[in-house]
Every structure is written in structure tokens, then in C-alpha cells.
Length: 114
Length: 116
Image (cartoon, rainbow over all chains, first blue to last red; front, side, top):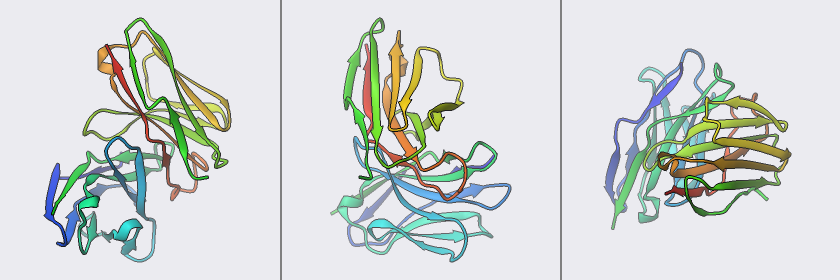
């Protein structure tokens, strides 16, 4: 089965500093990886995806993610954090062996302080 | 219109009540999903409808009954729920359930359900 892991329950960063939210994956074939963000009392919003091609993927709201095959990682990054980036972030992998359903990681809460 | 609309936003019900959650999208998507999310946890897939037919049921108890009246609507009928069923219920849609594998999901804002 395919899976993703987010090793940090919470990440704290000061506004203006760079941020990284970590994700590692385990897949048997080609990985199809996604990042979603969830603001309080809201549904999940798509941020970005990696299918093939460039290892650096750019997404919404200035976020980007770096695909690293040797380290099986897909970390989410942003050069300069905003207080409004504070939210719950989910890494996900599409499982071709389970009807192409998304399997989510446990989530990481990002807290950006002024 | 790129929205998935869910009603109601909040619902409080007793264990003997019958209620329904509603979800609507007008993006022409042919796959619709129900997820259950507990606080600070990832969403857990409950049901998938593809072309208005139930495609996946993740062994959900029968007190949850999904219905897809047409390609734009998805309901979740609730009966005799337990307090542990209290959660955020999210609806989502996508163009197709299967390929292509780069398909993204569009989520509604959810219904926060409390079972007393």
C-alpha cells in the first residue's frame, strides 16, 4: 500500500522567515503527490501536485514543494511565511491500487507568529 | 463556478434523530465523495460515487446512508448515530474517479456534526 508520513505535528515559524513542512512517501510505482491546506472550519484546498517533470513544483499562495526521489520526500516550502499561512497542511498520495483514492498524511499544523 | 457547497454548516442531533447532509456542485464533475474528519486528524474516506453509482463504501456502518439523486447532488442520510460519530463531514468532487492520476479534489467547507 502507498502511504505518506508527516513527521511533525506542528511547525512554528516567525513571520518573514522561510518555512518547511516535511513529508515522506512510500509507493510501489510512480508517485503522484499532493499538498492540501485546511483553514479553520473549512474544507481542504489544493495547493500543488507532483506528477512528473521538474522536481521543484510551484503552487498557490507562493508555496512550492521539492520532490526528492533518493530521499523519498516531498517537502512543502515557502521563502517568507505570513501569519495568514497558519493552517493545517496535509500531504497526500494517489493510490493507483485503491481506485486512485487519495491517502492523506496525518497533517502538520503550521503556526506563523508575528 | 468552482465550488462545492455543503449544508448545513453545523448540525446537532440526538441519537434517535434522522437528519440529512447535502452537497452540491455545478462543475460537471462525475465523481463525488464523502469524508469524515475528526479534529486535527486527516480526512477518512467513507463513500465514493462515480456517475451517480456507489463505487466505494469503506465499510461504513449502515447508520450512514449515502444517496446521489443526480450528477450535481450528494446526500448523506443519518439515523441512530452515536456520540463518536461527531466529526466534520466533508464532501468533495472531481472530474472523474479513476484516471487521470493527477486529478485533484475540490472540497466543500463541511458540516460540523455533534451527536448528543
